[in-house]
Image (spheres, rainbow, N blue to C red):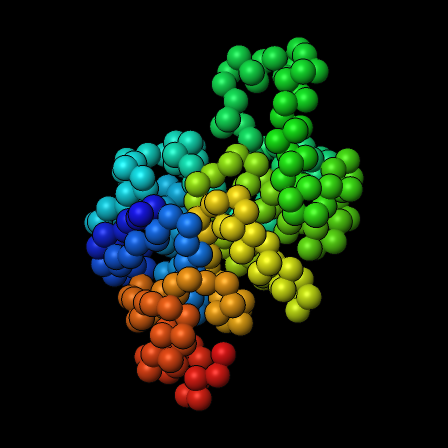
Length: 253
């Protein structure tokens, strides 16, 4: 079953074509990765999906929702969450409270008011966050302030905030950026578990080719807004244009 369908997307900034008639589909339960050098169009495509950019041409459908007619907060309610390459945490809030910022769309206005009037509503929200903290293995950090926490914990908090809203699709922008080898292996495991245990479809932008090749069902290579190749990790890795553009003439990843 197709989860996300992108048709003939074109995005242009002041004469520079960032996306040139890009079409692709992401199926439910898939881990789909986008690769490409800086400026290839990966982040622009993410920004079009979650409503930050409005393309001049094309269509984006997610489970019957026309995303190009919606604002970012409406797209979140459709079941799409996102993490960012540059961490968006608030330093002087606890890790749990940082995570709960991602649950706001699940609460109606009445619940939001009750949060400040009753402990019971706060307990409901905290249960959402604690469930995700436990899943990510950082439950012991719930009451620690974000300021001064290791980079890996900050990254996991960013992922947790995206997951707490129980999305159907998560967009992960450079999840391994700034990570050492051990942390990257842990991120790879977490991404697979997000799909396998939580049933969430994953769309990843990532420069770490070893990570991409180890977790992806399919890969799409972008270059200057154009699709160079799309298919299984091995197919894309061995595609002549991809080898020339990204992987070096030898094809080593």
